[in-house]
Amino acid sequence: MTAQLDPERIARARAGDADAFEALVEARVGPMTRTAMAILGREADARDAVQDALVTAWRELASLRDPGAFDAWLTRILVNRCRRGLRRIGVRRVHEIPVEAMTPDDEPRVADPTAAVGDRQALERAFDRLAVDERAVLVLHHLDGLPVADLAAVLGVPPGTAKSRLFAARRALERALAREGGR
Amino acid sequence: MSEPVGDTHLRDMLARRAGRMPPEAGREVLAAVREAMRAPKGGIGFALLPVARAGRGSVAPAGWAVAALVAVIAFTVLGGRLGRGPAATGGTTDTPATDVPSGVPTASGPAGAVQRLSAARLALGIADGTLDGRLVLIDSDLDLVPQPCPSPSTAMSCAQPVIVGLEDVRVTWDRELVVSVDATSGAGTPPGLVRAGTLVATPHDGGLVLLGYLAGDVERPLPFADIVSQFLYSRADPLALHPVSGWLIDGVRGCLRTPDASPCPVLPPRITDLEPTDEGFLRSGTAVEVAVSNPASGLDPQQVVTPGPFLVRLGIGRSSCPPDDTTCGGAPTLGWTVVARYDAGATVLVEVP
Image 1 (cartoon, each protein chain N blue to C red):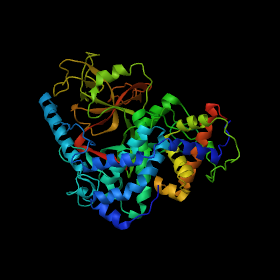
Image 2 (image 1 turned 30 degrees about the vertical axis):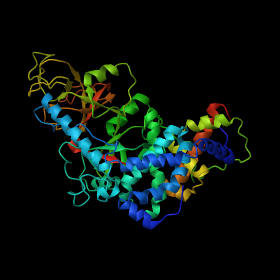
Image 3 (image 1 turned 90 degrees about the horizontal axis):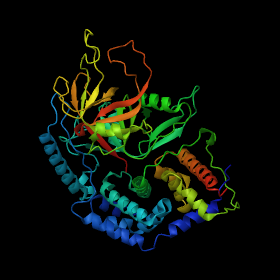
Image 4 (image 1 turned 180 degrees about the vertical axis):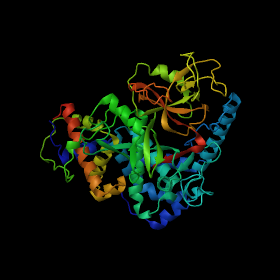
């Protein structure tokens, strides 16, 4: 959802200029709705999450210290709003990452690009079984194309941790797919 | 066994999923956002029902009416603030913004209102100890980061709690929570933990002690007896903290069970749904035995009668030994524990953006 940053526009928006804020997010709202849709899977929930995220961003913009980090900050708010969206749907159980699943160097496993997925719907159902944070890292990395460094900025964690979360999410998806009978 | 999912297939699936969002959705959402920004008062707000501070007295019905009125006013004020946009916040998301000189919260927020803090201000207050003992509500999620299990392992020792958005703050489990989860589940990774909802913690010794998560509306606590009957045959979730109303009676000596005892033993703490006398005697109504977490946040151990609301947990508590009987070694029992007293004026709310 990265669009060109205009420091002057951010400064005006931070000062309470609603027009500047609108201009700032205009190019970002489309990609945001796609990201939210990919995470949540339901149009109404995704629209709510984006709307809520933008209103929150407007309210909290003054607390953003580094205007250069606007995109990462906005994406983080969006992911948090997606999390709340799912929370409204119902209480989720913690997804536990088994200790043995963590490799010493936390390197993501290289997936076989030629591996066939027998049932596309099964993959999506498996994706729906994931916690929202797991969905988010997969969407941001594989759909939005965020490199690990940018993913780390969005999550507010060191790159190593972002990598490890990406890896864990991938493994969780594979396990969920196995439960769906797709693997 | 699970097999790797190909990058291409994953990307295709996500693209198909995202593609179900109509192209005009962005424009429509932006229009709705524009409306919300221009509205003088937003529909978004947060208000908690303020109650009187713990005292020998109680909250009379008239007091509740006043408290409810204050809550309505608080909601209106907050609603007005939220509609004004970033410039109106004075550069911070915290409240109050004007009378806090050094980033450290005052001892109490505006009368009866929950104090809102940014994550940065919370970290500051934790580090310098000024928030110690306060109740902290955090609207975020809990990550359980696996760590090598010690031997012998306990349920919670295999996972390090991390609060999303507060990754730099050290978080430890409430000791009694650990006992409860270990006793109910045995060794291994912690089962049955829930990450949704508002997390409840209290700062201590430069970090946060995680007490659990809110399992109800703290604005509308239910009578304790209702909660007890509701969970009579339910499986305990020790992380769940239920907001309940009532009066806690603690430290009263009585000879109801052994009339010839001398001196009369201290009776177990109880929560009653009708206001007792100042001395802790029941006028009527029901009372349910509880354990009191040591130390329970917001409770004065010297106080005989404390009005609620309280946050209570159903889990493995200490045995039902009398509080002053240090020789009693009864087995741990499943029961209700008072973890904290909820006082809006002494509570801080942290909203992770």
